[in-house]
Figure (tube, rainbow, N blue to C red):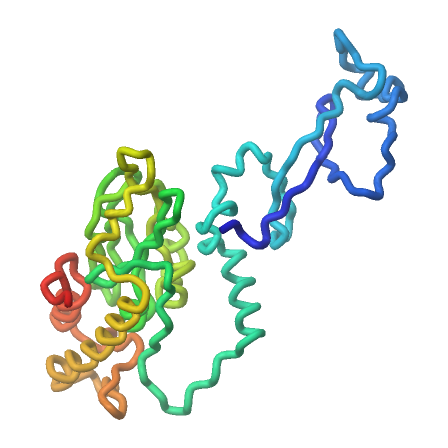
Length: 318
């Protein structure tokens, strides 16, 4: 599905001019301005250039082209239609565009404002699982588009447990490998690795300066890597990369169970430790967002290895 803010237009411009200014064709424009009439011979720009076989009907330097542009951008930038295949605007990857996310969130909030949480409520956030995502046992997700492109990142449980990330480093660059990133929290490096080798074309460099996006928007602006999956013998994207991953209602049920398992783990394994006077458990046994910042290094690594390490959860799949 293409971005709803993507627009197309027919533009014309002068190849003889030192500055290429694209003019959008509209119904209200005259059909015979100077460029599209024999009067072009009086144009100073056309006089400076020689054309071996000039047209008598219109200027030989008048060029028309079909372009695309973003109607949400503050500054309109025309992209030739021939390059549209290289743009994320023409497929489902537009969901990870900063402009689209900002406007989509604003429209959703206006249509259905989120209810305010009761005072003193510390229950962890359990946002609905996007139906188009597939989830690995170590709480990473992948969004596989029909053209074989993908985005991947960490899920809501990771974002809720660790809260704001201090720093993000990418261990794998442009290559075919298991996408891996190091997320730093309180001086502790946590290595998140997707279980399947993929062709990586780009990492989300914005996270280096805005690591807080991992917690604020784990399923959109907090994505870690993008790339393409291999193609099978028929030339179609190899969807076997999602084998063993959870999807749809199964993923929703599993993630809710993981939130409950996290609460139980905190209660049984960590609640008896001194947390520097900060409350860890809320009424009913729930954990607070970002509670790991009250743990020491060993406790944090213990929790990470149980839920988020590259091998976590594979033996617990049901």
